[in-house]
Image (cartoon, rainbow, N blue to C red):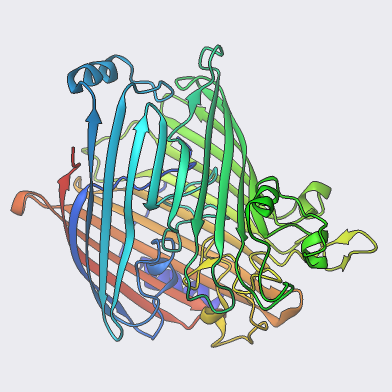
Amino acid sequence: MIYLRKALFLLFGIIPIIAFSQPDTTARSTNPNYLEVGGLYSSSDRTPFWLQSNQFGTVPRSGSALTIRGGGAKSWTLGKRDSIKEWRRQHSSSHKLVPGWQAEVGAEVVANLGPTTHLLLPQAYGAIRYGNWELFAGRRKQWFGLADSTLGTGSYVWSGNALPIPRIQFGLTRFTAVPFTSGWLSVLATYSDGWFEGSRPVTSELKLHQKQLYGRLGRPGGRVKIYAGINHQVQWGGKSPYETVNGQMPKGLENYLYVIIGKGRYAPNLTFFDSTNRVGNHLGTVDLAFEVDTENANLFFYRQNIYEDGSLARLTNIADGLNGVRIRRKQIDPASGFSVNEFVFEGLYTRSQGGSVFDFDGRIFGRDNYLNHVQVRDGWSYFDRAIGTPFIPPTSETIQKFPNFADFFTSNNRVWVLHLGLQGNVFRNVQWQTKVSYSGNYGVYDLPFETAAYQFSGLLSLQAKMSWLGGMIIKGSLATDQGGLYPNTTGGMLSIRKEFGPGR
């Protein structure tokens, strides 16, 4: 509690008064063309948690740095532009199919100059669309799952914490009405395959398979909507020194079919592990959500249930998952001196994992060991960052205080988290945002922490649009970590940004 009081003082001491006053599934970044220059400072060798987490791997994890970044997209309508504009004007509902063909290319470059220099390419893609259907190839910022992607902790299995993985993806860009249902039933589905980096600590030549299917009951303009669906991710086909034949995980078209359906297969050229489990490392969430539109606000309640083996089917890990509520105000007075426009509260729990016992012969399947895998020892990660929730961190981030769990990706996947996110306006043209999280961390079943590590992480951000130079945006953030998991540190970022509008 001493850490919590210190952190609250650091984070909120500069503010005299704090007053309280469409689900993101397969959402993608919609940044306009922009150029931004900024600086990052940290009081220790580690960047505070909420400065670097869920930033698509673009903020350095250590040291102070100068950052220069820019990006944008250009799209074309492959048809009669005037007729499509008129159609859009007449059909504003999001479930309607946009007619005609469109093409788009986009890119984003980030240079971080500090103790070490990194040049990153978080986005570089090409896409072609027909109506709400899209085929794209390359790297693109996305989130998967029914959860808030801005003020929350991020979707459990795909949070936007790591650099985007290069892949080819086909599917719908938004919830789209099923024919003959009068808009009462809509679906969203995508299917993709990709490739992991070649410089992983344990595995190599690893491939990604990813798909999702979500349904929505209720018309787009209705007061009440119910959502349900599943996402499915697989790491497969690579090389690993563990539980493989001559270092090779199952690959090829025949095994790919088993990857798609999530089944193991009995074959003389496969290991006992592959035959009795599944081909590859499978993980994902089964999501439920409930949305209510009132005259003054939009309320969105969501639950993500975790699966990595059969525990969820047996309901033995049903306690684990992400629960959240988001409230967005609709009636906002621009003349108000201070407002809270959006509120998110979440609870993440991963301590159960089906229990502490795994007994194959006794059909007791506990110890799910989230985001770790026996073959893919470097886990559900990309360039040593968690693809999923940042609250299950890589061992490289916690080894300063806790031992390394063999060569597995994480040494801390049994956690609980309470999180609050707020966003609003102050002084008319100034936007503010804050994230505060408090967590309990217990290690893994095979190597628990001797004592639980409690951690506070907080962030306060301010953003103002100025009139000079055609509208520059000044952004500033202050963040702090206080507790037993990470080094105590305080840091901040300050940047200036110029946006140029969409490229059409």
